Structure formats: structure tokens, C-alpha cells
Image (cartoon, rainbow, N blue to C red):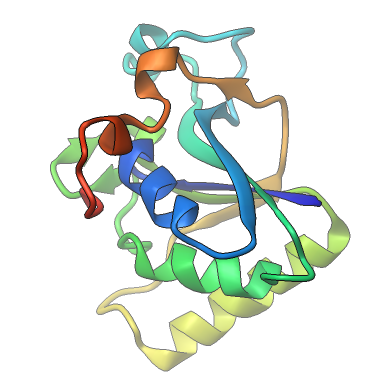
Length: 156
């Protein structure tokens, strides 16, 4: 099993999108990329902790590749809006790939270049590609939020 971590706005829809994939063993909604120990949702919403809402994905590379996960990532949000996804504003909603290996970093950079060159979006991609740091699971009520409410489509 390998781990991948993606931030693409509100983690509810992102988690739902990755949970649907064959080869994804589990997902956890949480916070990453900030400077506060064990942040709460209320703290990250202030923008002061600099954490992003993110989804940590545990996947079987024999069934789904990191590149396939990247494809889902690029298509589940708008990677051209800085610190915003739809009506959600703030650095916690930024687009980011938090890589866990040199191979993931290179694959993410190559994928970002290809998406930018393909003109999939009207503007340039602003997605951060940065090393994974401490991941803090979100509160229980955030885990599988849409699934618990029998919502089958992403909020993105």
C-alpha cells in the first residue's frame, strides 16, 4: 500500500471522489501543511494555522497508479483558483499535492505541466506541489460526511 495526500477545496467531496475508486483501500479527511499541532476545524477556518483541508488516500499501486489518482485530482476541482473552490475562500481551500516520495513529486510535476499545456482550464494552474508533513485527521463528523448523508455526488 502507498499513501497520497491531496487538497482540492472542501474535503467532503474530495473524499467521496477518491472513495469511489477501485484500488483505494481507505481515505481520511484532515489537515496538512500548517504550523499548529493538532489543529481543530475552527482553528484552520481562521486561516491562521495555514493548514489545508486534505484527503489522505491509502491505495494499492497494483490496482490503481498514482498517475490515475492525479487524473481524478485534476478533474475534481478547479486548480486555477488561488485559495478558493466555488463559494469557499481561504488558504484552507487551496489546491495542493503533498507528495510522499521523490517519484510522487516528479509524477505530480509532470502531470501539472501536461494539464497546463493541454489547456484543460482557462487559466494557469496554481496547485502547490510540496512535501507531505504531519497529517492531522479531521474531527469524526467530517469523516465520510457526504456518504453518511447518502449524498452520492461530489459537492465540487
